[in-house]
Length: 428
Ligand code: GDP
Ligand code: IMO
Ligand code: MG
Image (cartoon, rainbow, N blue to C red):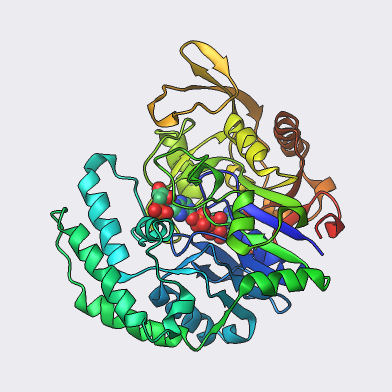
């Protein structure tokens, strides 16, 4: 059968985990394709919150198998914690989780290098999650990495030590204090734990599943504007967060892709440094942060908040070939009299609807269209036709601008708070 992809259209934290958890029973396999424990995907079921960093967001549903693809970078310590936490909740993770042997390992020294590099950048820091993501992908593309499949090799420790020595030499260029012994011991204990998991050639598993009529939902992490190629470089993450990343990160052919579901909040947030044209450094921004509990699921850092940015979303839709949009967190704007949406960027006195080459060094004056707020609690609506006129007006403005339908509207963090525009058959 086909692969559908679900990914973030903004700067991450759009609510991917929530929507994937809801959609998961409709698929045979949920497969994460990139990123690592920099991600924090939140699921709320019967009032209980679970934050997933590496394990795919289908794990709390009974039907699908879950795959951590080759494009993901894995910190065995985080993975172990996550699996043990799920096991303690009664989830038999090992029965439903496969891990690609080609996924790269985050070493203790990758995390130290991440921290040292960020500290050295001072005010120009990326605002990394300090999970070792960038040094690990650097070693992957530099062809120096260690992969999950290597952990059973007799040469594992020797290769590890070689890479560690290289990292320790690199660390000499930084004035950065660290202690390795304790985290290294924990890391090797976690490696033993990982040996007990299902380590597979996931590209064969996934392609065989497709050949046998099974359906796959590919789970993105981060968001389009954090993509290493098309995001707000250099304030990005180190992987391809976009549709094409699913092909690289899982080994599935582009011809198998059917629906691309893009997720966007009804406003916009960003955590970490870097450009954010519609950021609200005022009471409105503060109100959105407070009402929306906009604090990072991985680091707890306050998220920067602003209005929805339509030129940015249009760009993300173009890059990803989005076929439908899921909108989250409109309920956070329930009490607003007026909702604003950025329709144009003014750069050097000229209006533009394109994302400039170097957003970080371009002065952008966002131009806003004002829309009437719905002033109703969206959480009480379960069907599309019952949604208030004013909210539907906001939706059609967004849809018309983006030329793409909003087919799902999330009205709360809980699994069941999701309103569909059309029947789910549209998804594979
Ligand atoms: P992800 O990284 O894209 O999975 O998103 P996060 O989990 O980091 O952040 C999204 C946050 O918003 C989480 O706390 C979710 O529980 C919450 N959330 C998701 N959808 C909705 C929604 O429609 N309304 C509200 N109020 N909260 C939501
Ligand atoms: P999910 O999957 C939001 C941001 C960091 C930083 C930049 C680089 O939960 O949406 P990294 O640690 O990757 O080197 O950090 O990317 N970032 C995220 N922001 N959501 C995420 O993931 C993120 N993962 C990384 O804040 O600005
Ligand atoms: Mg998140």
